[in-house]
Length: 420
Image (cartoon, rainbow, N blue to C red):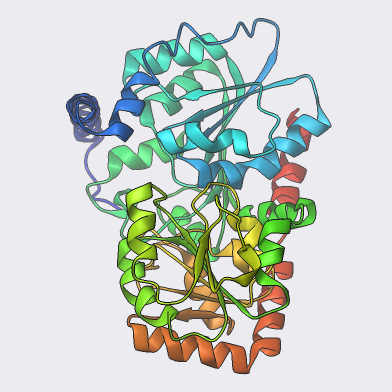
């Protein structure tokens, strides 16, 4: 068990102090975001989106409410397979989904979903959390991956709501496992069950006395397989790619582009770039560094006679991966690696930057022979060449790995099924 063995009275006092400090930190979070909203568009959306939140909540009297909370769009994708199974099993369920991040609220409608109401999660103060849970009266609450808002979780517990963590991932350096983390451990102890991704997470939770845990895997595998099965062929991208070798760059950030752009002009293949930031200035900056011919997706003129296609629109990256020979996924130089499962499901080698410790699939891809870490343009170029030389073997490894890891949603639903 982590933490010092303090007398019970001292533990209660410490818990109250930590609770006070937590609530003060939430206040300052709110204050900081309100100040930032004066000049930061994302912070402005965060504040504005919560202005009429309670007024717009639906009347759920007499309904069986299931609540899913997701940090952003990636976690929404992670929860979607389970949401769909719950609704298919019982269409009378009223499904409420909340997001913390504006990006989730902005883009969730691009996904096929069965949610009945979608909104921001209120700020995690005791009063707002109680008000929210009283209004929606959820029978069950699902927190995806690593969203643990203490006051909402406590309000759920006091309401008699069953509380679950889906596709949880835990690491030794998190505050739950430090001697000073008693307050946060108490939050985890309120959960009825944890469906975690791996053995390490199970062991860490067990080490702090939490036994209501099982390994289900990562439900994102189910989602990317579902996306692949339902993908409509993109005729514009097909026209660009023809039957040639295609290097696809997904969700690139400026740090990624520093090593990508110098070698794009040297590659003897088609290239598709999907930058994370698609504002006009950034896209023009990328285009200015290209020596060969290029075309923007928003301008399909002579798309089949170009060397590089820049996806300057949202929602076409998954379609592009279907034509890929090898992929580079951005975010690996900032510690915010984007979804590397999306290209892997199509069976190809996947390249990314060195900062992927928070994403276990990054290490797993490397260990299974189809993931590749690079730090420089020279490494990137040689890695692409090596992948293409052994493409068939690497593609098979990627496809086999994905196939072995699907089914997390089925495992979770099987355990939950009797509760609905």
